[in-house]
Each structure stands twice: as C-alpha cells, then as structure tokens.
Length: 524
Image (cartoon, rainbow, N blue to C red; front, side):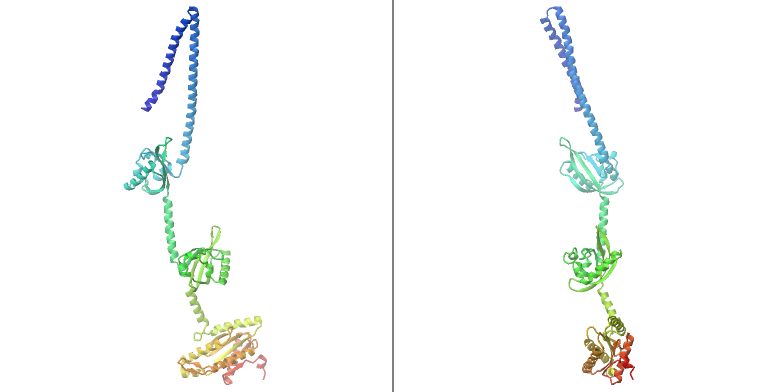
C-alpha cells in the first residue's frame, strides 16, 4: 500500500497544481474583466486595458512558471548530486566488501532476525564448503553445519540470544561439519546489528578456523608429556642453566631430588641455593676452565667432580653438556649422573692395583713407581733421599711353629707399627714375603741411619700378636742406601739397600747396616 501510495503522489501533485492554475486563471479573467468594465466604460480604453491585462497575466504566469521550474531544477540537481554521492558510497562499500570482507581470511556472515543468511564471504565458502548462492536467504545452513540435533539446538539458542541483543560472544568454540564431512573447530565472535532507528536488524559473526591450532596444541602437550616422562625417568638430572658464576638453573628435571636432595624449585634461579654452591670452590674453577675450552672449540664437555648433597653427603657426579644459544645468551644444556658407586669401584680397583692386600701398604710395583718419582724430584731440586730395606728375622720359624695365619697376623701388626712410626711424607711398601721398603724424602745418610735404628728398637721391644691372644718377639734387619751416594736410579738404590740388609743378617741380625759410600766400597 505504501508503494502504491508513493507512485500516486506525483499524479496528485500534478493535478493539484493544474487545478490551482485553472482556478487562478478563471478568477483572474472573471474579476479582472469585471473590474476593467467598471473602471473603463469607454470601449476603446477597455480594449487597451484588456490587451495590457492579458500581457500582464502572461508575464505573471511566466514568472510563476519560471520560479517553479527553477525550484524543480534546483531540486533535480540536488537529487542528481545526492544520487551520484550515493552511487559513490555504494561503489566504495562494494570495494570495501570486496577488499575486506570478501578477501578476509576469516569467516564472516550476517544473519537476519529469522536466522537466515544475508552475507556469506569467500572464507566462509572455503571453510564450510557451501557456496554463497546455496545459503543466502535460507536457514538450511544450520542443519548442514550442525547435523546433531541437540548440538544444533544449543548453538541456535545462543545465536537467538545475540539476535535479541542479550549479549555478545567472544571466543565461542563450535565444531562444524563441512560439506566434505570433515569436522572443523571454529572460534566465534558475534554481536547484534542495529539500524539507524536503533532497531535490531540481524547479527554479524566472525569465525576463526582454529582446527590446526588446536591440533598443534594437542601435539605440543603430548610431546611435553613425553618429554616430561622421559626426563623423569632419566638416570640423574637433566638441566638447562646460564653460563655464569652461579650456574643459574633455568630448568632441572625431577631427578634433581634424588641426585642433590633439593627440590627442583629450590635450585631454579638460585631460589634457595645455587648449583655452584654444591661444588667445592677449587672444582668450580676447574669446571669453568673446561667449559670455556669446550665452548671455544664448539664441542661438548664431559666432567667429573664431587658435589655436596642437601644432607651433607658428598657424592661424585659425571656431567655431559654443551653450549646452546638462547635469546642472545649462551646457555648450557646437559645431564648430570651420580657416579659415586663407580668412583668407589675405581678407588677399590686402584687400591688393588697399588696396595698389598694383606697389609694395605703399597705393593712392589707402586713403590718402584713412587721411588722413580722421588728420585726425579731429588735430582730436580738437589735434595737427599734415603731408602730402608727391612727384612724380618727368623720369620719362617713363626710360620712353621704357629702357622701361616699367625704369620699373617704378625705381618699386619708389624707393618701397621712401622707405618705409624714414620713421617707423613715417608712412603712404606711391601716388596714381597717379609721384605718391606721405606722411602725417606729429604733425609740424608745420618738421619736415615737414626730413623732405621729407632724402628729396629721399636720392633724388637714390641711383642707382635699371633691373632690367638698370644704374642711373639720379633726382630728386623735393615739396610740403608742414600741418593745419590749409593745410586742415581731405583735399581741401584734398591740393590745397595738389599746388600746392606743381607750384611746385617750375616752379621747377626737385629741390626742396621748403611750401604758404604763409593770410595768406602773400593777400600781394602
């Protein structure tokens, strides 16, 4: 009806204008003729007046027509300008739609108050698989995107709330089914649309396809769980730390608890204690130099050093790591293992390799090595060095009379007594059987003789236990040789001391004999 009424308005206005014109003309002619007849009774004068009156009527009506046409033309020009402006706005709006809405990489659609699609951009087509001409003006898309009835009802209810202007949604996630049957996860931002009269005319929704993002997040979480499980089951502690004086820990695995006794949080960022505090100061310096060298050579590093646990227990650890770049800083990553058992085994093996199993003294091989080192040191610094060669007197009789177990008891007790009676710098070892050797660094001939005599008296005055509650007297014979008077190598010194010991035995045992000096050895 409104459209029909609008179409009839120009006709009515035209008829009204014509009617007004006819009425005005009739009134002008009627009243002007009457007045002219009254005012000009002369026919000739009346004729001239009628002529002027007609010209005046034409002039007035022409002026009125001119003004009317001028007004209409002005209106038409304004309407043409407005129409041109509107066309420009429409063109710009179409360009905006083409450049922004159509080319946007996010799903954009507009719904009318009935939930029918009014706008469906290219991204919506690509994501859903449904073309614009299939969905415009229809609400069938709801069934296509959400085939599950309960899910569709829930989402449609939320859309209707927006159409009623009962709020807007931000980051509202739904799972759609595409035309190809693939499920995609969409995050929606939606709000209602209002006209200039503030009436709700629909809603606009912008959808982000976050399917790949969520899959990536799930993959990352799975990898993090796998990495966490791997870290938790690693022997020892995996770490990432700063390359600084504190070895500031940025990450430590849960193995930190078993390795150091500290919770991971206590070491992170030196919250309670820095890792450097667990390492002795002298070891820290050695570690720093080793790491510096490895970084300079672009190589991994391997270190062994002791650390002190939270309970005060000292353990040995093995660390393997390398430098990595992190936000422009040099970081260290690696793993630290407890090798205390291995170090204990190594020490035990070292003891077996260097110690006599019965007495715990150095064995013959180790004593020979130590003697070579002491001779080299004595040569370098021009210092004295003495060697005592000791043999038990009549030891075979103890074994024969009391048994080898008793003999072993005497050997252990006598060796312990000798070890306790020398200086801390002196070295004592068992060369085999009942023969013992003592190295006396920086001790000359006379001092060595005095030391040997003191030891001889100590042993002869101290009964030795047989291991069964009984004791037995024991004496020793000692030969003494001195560097460099009796030799400049281990073989010569040992031979000289051994000969002096046999001389002591042949002279009656229980005595000390000093190896003769070179000139004494050649005197008759």
